[in-house]
Length: 494
Ligand code: MSP
View 1 (cartoon, rainbow, N blue to C red):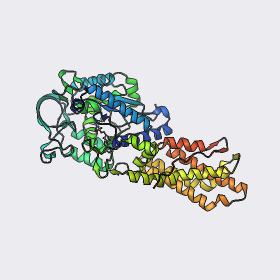
View 2 (cartoon, rainbow, N blue to C red):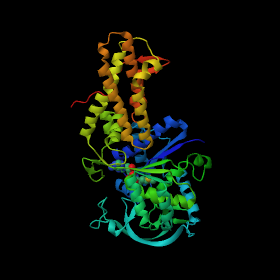
View 3 (cartoon, rainbow, N blue to C red):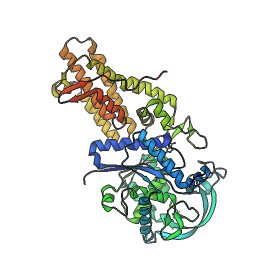
View 4 (cartoon, helix red, strand yellow):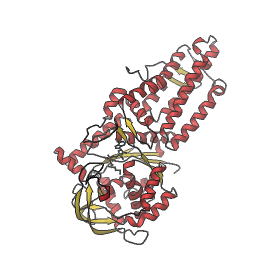
C-alpha cells in the first residue's frame, strides 16, 4: 500500500440540527478529501464523518422533545446526512455511535484497556469514587476554577454535583509520553498556537479521568461492569477506529489507521490531543499523524447557541445563493485555524465581488469570445506555453503548498490571483479589437487554457462550479470546445 489519506471530522451531537459551524468543519474536510483524491487516486482516500448519539446530553434533549433518545438520534442523524448531501460532502462513510458495529468495537477496545498497563507499569484502569461538577453541555467534569459565578462559562448552566463510583483511566501516567510525541511532531498538532496550548496543558500535569458513568443509561454498557455505561467522550473518540473495522476487520484497519488528519474544532482539542492519544497508546495503536483545530464562527458577533436561537441554517443559505457560494464564503472568509464572523451581507458582497464579478465574469468573457471561432485547434507548446505557463506554474506551486499545509484560504487566494491575471491578459491583448484570426485564436486558447486550469484548482472547493466551467470550456485532443452557457453566479441585487 502506498500513500493514503484518512481524514475525519468530529462526529456531531444529535441534540442540535446542523448549523453553519458544523457545515464549516465538514466542508473543510470535504475540500481536503477531494484534493487528496485527485492527487493520490480515488481509492487511496477515506473520509469519515458521523454523529455522536449517546450520553446524558442526548437523553435530556430527547426527554425534552418527548421522544426516545433513539428516535431523536434517528431523526437528527438523518438531517445531518441530508444536509451533507446538499452541501456535496463526499464522505466515504458515516458512522453513528448507536450502530452495532460501533458498540462492538467500543467493547473490544475497553476489554483491551482493562488489561492494559501504563508505561509506568500501573494498570491503565482502576475503580474509584468521584466527586465533581459535571457539565452536561460539555459532557465533561469541570473544575471549580473553570466556573464563573457558579456557572459553566460556555453553557451558562449550573453544573451538577455528582458523587459516584466510576472506572478511571490513568491519564496521569501519560503526560510524559504524550509531551514527547507532540513535541517531536510524531503527533502534529496545528496550528502552532494550539500545539503550545496542548503542551502547556500537559506540562502542568494530567489528572486521571472517569471513563464510565453509573447513572447514565443512554450509552454502551461497560463490558466488565454492565451497571455502568462508557463515558460518552470515550465512546465517541473510538468512532475513528470503529468505522474502519477495529476489532473485527484487521485488513481494513491496517489499510487506513493511523488517521492522517483529524479535523476538529478548537473547543475539543484536549479530547483529541490528550485523551484520545493516551487511550491509543494504552491499547497499543498508532497515534494519528495530525490533529488540526479550526476556529469558530460567531453570528453577528454572538456565539452560535441553541438558547440564543441564532444558528444559521446552511440549507437556507444554499437555497438563496447556491451551495458553492456557501462553501466559498466559509473557507475564504477566515484563515483556516482562525475565528470569524458569519454575516450574510458579507456573504452577498463576496458573492457579487469574487464569484459573480471574478470567476463567473471571466468564464462568461472567455466563453463569449470563443463563440467567435468555430473549430479551434491548438498546440500547447507553441500556442500556450510561452505566454502563460510561468504564471500558471507559479500559482499551481503555491496552491499545492497552501493545500498541503492546510492554508485553505491562501489556496483560494492563489486561484483568484490567476483569475485577475487572466482578466488583465484579456484587457491587455484586447481580443475584441484583434482582426487577425490567427492572433485571435491564440489569445482565446491561452485564456481558455487558464480557465480550465482554474476549474481544476477550484474543483475541491466548488465541485459543481468546476463541472459547469468544463461544460462551457473544454480541451480535448488538441481541440478547444467552447459553448457559452448560463452565468455561473448571476449577480444579486445590491
Ligand atoms: N460530539 C462532539 C465531538 C465528538 S468527536 C469524537 C462535539 N459535537 S458538536 O456537535 O458539539 O461539535 C462538533 C464540532 O462542530 C466542533 O468541534 C466544531 O468542529 C464544529 N462547530 C460547532 N459549532 C461551531 C461554530 N460555531 N463554528 C465553527 N465550528 C463549530 O463536540
